[in-house]
Image (cartoon, rainbow, N blue to C red):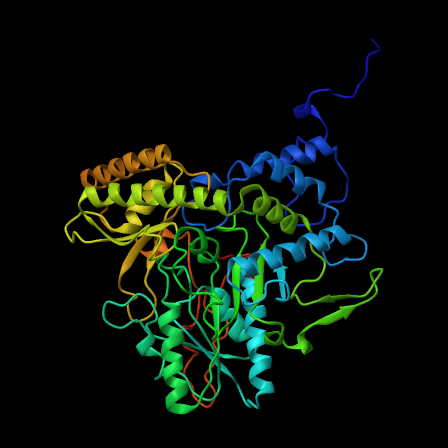
Length: 494
């Protein structure tokens, strides 16, 4: 065999001897296997996604779904003329989801796939804003909600809408129907119940909220529609709590958003926005695009995006069907209840949500009730990280922000055996914290990690008032200085 000067061992190849480019665009190329190894090895520092109980997103998919994603890498879902079958599959999914949510006529319902529930929520909000204007609304519209995920605060800021977040009163953890009358007016374009609250996992009572708005209409004449943020609950209740009325069975519900990549079991990047009837989606928001090979209608914040997420969502729908989804989701609830029972048996915890499918999503949330436990929940969360578990600890929303809770989201691929391992690690963590208590307990700022909300870099005052919009702080946020740290900084929220 002829000798060669080219090294045949990966870790002796050119490029591997230097650190990976980080701050400037690299001047030279490198072997693909070297570039792969550099990126691959850095990703070893990430957490294990299936042990991340702070995220709501899919962390396990089967081999067939992975194959379909790989085969669809080059399919642009917006190019419906070039990829007509991808477009047809997306339309099938819209009809299936509309049927799941009891649309009056699923075959005529308008809807779209999105990159996730945040985009879908914003599309529902935009449609509500345009309907409000068409009814004669002027000035700045508002929407009423309880504690919500940060996407709604972003929607309010980006699309010039006032967000009215109902404060938590007494022992309440959700928006209650009797809170609505004091917060709605002629400029209220919609009320947004959260069907699977981010903070606790609890469902807000959409049916009771709809009935309360019926009462408001009787007394004031205001006909206020509902948009349901069913980011997580939209693919749970239809299978595990089918008698719970929260969807298009309520005429006041005009649109619903959900994440396909959460409890819909699809890979990351899948969401759905569905309107009750075609008339609920204003025509002004739909664009006919004719320069990609044919004329097509589109309503998305994003334009070009991969078609694999909608394709794999369809794969999940036809593979599992109602029977399969029910079996899978009931098993996840079983796992959640097993965790709740184990935590309750430990003694120092009180359950807020124990995985009851009639009350919330496949999650468990709890508070520490023992004031003399010798640790707080931030300490416990930090200690569990040493074993690879990522479990959120955070304060409740405004007016109850002095209360700290923990929440674990259970997803497809999590087993009872894994729960037993987690419970054993929690017990060990508690024993270690009691044996070696911290001289200064951790705080939210010390613990870092998961957060539910964000403060804008510049606070926006309410119209005519010097106070910040509800849910936003007037205090100056801590923003990384570009002089002190020249590295680019990104912010992300689950």
